Image 1 (cartoon, rainbow, N blue to C red):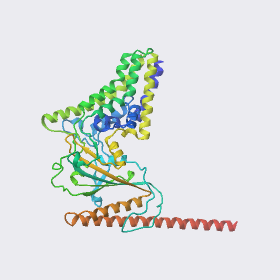
Image 2: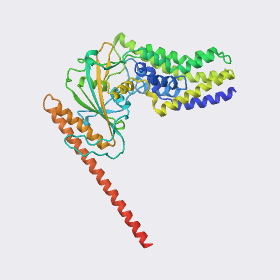
Image 3: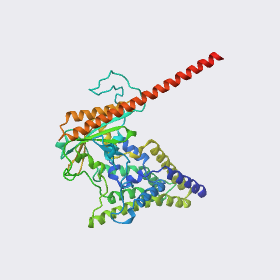
Image 4: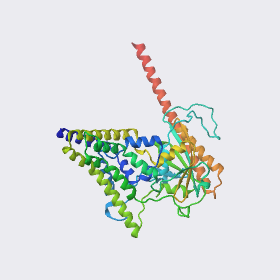
Length: 459
């Protein structure tokens, strides 16, 4: 029986290593963000689908590889955090004033980009005509191709609850809260149940296995105290004296998830494309403490890498019924890992998903620091049945912005008009290409029909 269990355990380890992703360890290193939602449906998914008691050695090795490749092993304040498990790189870009595409910049961790990715297209009317007041069109249902979302996100600073506005939903992720602890414990509920079963049920009475099953929970609780410090929302002065207080427009280039226009003062917007959420790496004594947190976080991942192999080796000396209990739970964990990867529940409990849920309900969200300073966000999202319709709506948003906002100087207005002209010209070219392609297809169809007629008459 031990040989069979060992063979099955090896197969399970292989399947788990293939199914697990680095997102499990992003949760471990950033619990304030990934366990920040106490919604009932979210808590149920956390409890059932996101334990870390399974074969995660493959994902752990991938995470450790990112640390090595980015130079984090070289010493204090060495290496680049961006692109590692500490600070994921979304790979998206953004543009200033929507027309500077040649000067595209990286969104880095892009908090609001991830928020908009979490916004779903539901409960909205998609039978939309062109809404450009300067180019009215007859009501019609455009052809359906790829459903496109157009987001118009507005950001502004708020110093306190009164400034944020009545009814604003308060959200914070700068420190460990009761939501963080609750999500952490619930995510290992299945492990706790197996531990109690192994210790208390008469067929088992295996206390060391109970302790083994509680190791992931213990490591995750340790991570709450050893996680790295991160940059929070900047003061208006810290955001940069060269940046103005007037609203400006930014476009996020994330075509898979639709079109996004972000409006707000540069001080409020740009920090989320730069260092918001980046681990703090100070100098002096504080820097040594920051380095210690980094090393401890990497050590926790290393312990998770050893966790499943240690259990697999120990299973060879377990009694038969205990072996069956351990093996059954490992099968359960790889099933949940496959489900999470296929369905896309690896973002369950994240701050961004929580913010997106409130924005979908047309609520204002106040993302704040512990001292009350924060960013107030509101969102308007529309669905369009194809790319051309979505681009027209983006043009309408840009025109409306330059029509109703007084700009300092004339350069911004000129840039805005120039950007609109470029967009309209590009849209016309795209429509012309589509019409030309459609005409060619019709001509080919007519020729084929004519050939069939000739063949039929000849026969």
